[in-house]
Length: 276
Image: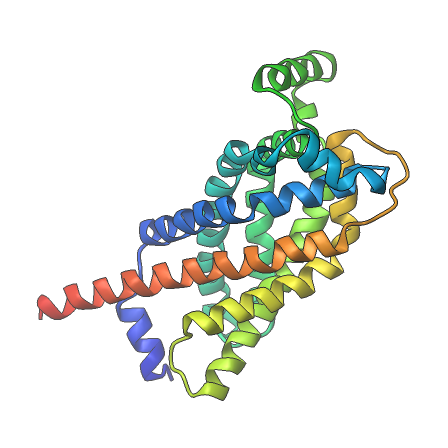
């Protein structure tokens, strides 16, 4: 039997376009705030000389280099996040109606499948973003490099690193959503909240993202090297930079998304009440 909370959520369920708008706004906010951390992570993974880390990034190229690849990052994150989060909610509802809303496998399966679709669709732009962050390139040089690769290796070269990306992102997503949904429910129950607060979603997202990031770190290193074509021995795997980036990124993104859904749910409820 559906409880009062489930009935209310079903009655005032947000539309697909509202889900897309919420996830898109969250992606923009997250990209702007987290891009510098992503740049540091990529540089540390791609460099073979640990003594030059700080100097290469700031002293030589300037602080603006921290936002290198921001536009490709937005070009990747906005459509990817819209597809990803919208697919997740749709798949979560579909699987939840078939095998039970509270079944542990629901977020696991929905998260993995949603990420597979999103990662495949935007893999070429992800590759471009990674190359821009690994070493400073003008858009003209970047386009020339991509054009040369396509001429020599064909269009499939744009999906270089797709395998490691999928191997990293699919298990990351499955682990992330499974842990996030679990932590969110536990915190709501412990604090006696019917709806998750900003603090609950933020902390759940940060912890869930950190756990998933640690477990999938080797695939992230492989993906970075594959896309930057740098296979020198690496002295650091970048676990700290990855955690420093992933934890706040997951926390900011999921908090913004949940807030957006809650906002639209209130609007839908107000409209429904006015029409009674």
